[in-house]
Amino acid sequence: MRIDILTVFPEMFQEALSGSIIGKAREKGLIKINVYNIRDFATDKHRMTDDYPFGGGKGMIMKPEPVFAAVEHVLEDAKGKPARVILMTPQGKTLDQDTVRDLAEEEHMIIICGRYEGIDERIRCSLATDEISIGDYVLTGGELPAMVLVDAVTRFVPGVLSEETLISESFTSGLLDYPQYTRPREFRGMAVPDVLVSGDHEKIRLWRRKQSLARTLERRPDLLDMASLSEEDLKLLDEIKKEKFSDLTREDPGNEHD
Ligand code: 9D3
Image 1: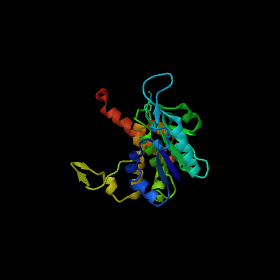
Image 2: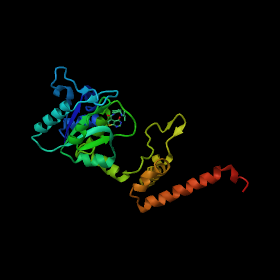
Image 3: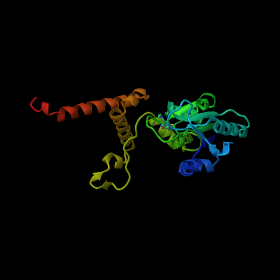
């Protein structure tokens, strides 16, 4: 997969995209990432990338010409083969794992990072094929969102993650992780659950699955509705609900004199 990132802050990407997993994927040639400075495609004397908004108002707007020139340069370099042109914008579709999986199948992604108070509408409507946000909070630009997107997509590129990781991920997909522990066996009075040191692999598997289901039920019940659950999962969920109910009746002081 080829990824080209267009930004006015190319330095922001150097560290982020050379870390362990992405760095190794790049070294192995599984992904090729180029970062372009949009300013290098500005042709005016001051190499301006932003300008005042027509109609007035505060803040500056990203100019269309350098962004169009940068995208066209990249497409020519890719010998005219089509690419997904992704605009990082607060108005985009919120990134989720289904979108990540879809994008990971692409041969070529061009990511445009917005800055300033906004970007010229003509970039959005005639250059971008996709508009993506990473969530409902305001950041200072599209650079961090672009890094989030590249990180998430890279994990799905064949060869980047081990077979094991992918299998365990597909098995737990849609559920929250179970609690994990490493040494020491006891830390500041907090002990590792006995089941994890029991050596009984079937008991450990069931405990972990039940913990995943319980956490998901507690914190993200919306995810449970979408997860594909086995007969065993439904049985574990039943146990969890019964245990929770008995906890409630035990702790409810109103029941003490029943
Ligand atoms: C929504 C606020 N906008 C209305 C005045 C101004 C504005 C604020 C911040 C416009 C752009 C930005 C910069 N943010 C992004 O470019 C961005 C973003 C984000 O802020 N949150 C989540 N995902 C993304 S993707 C790109």
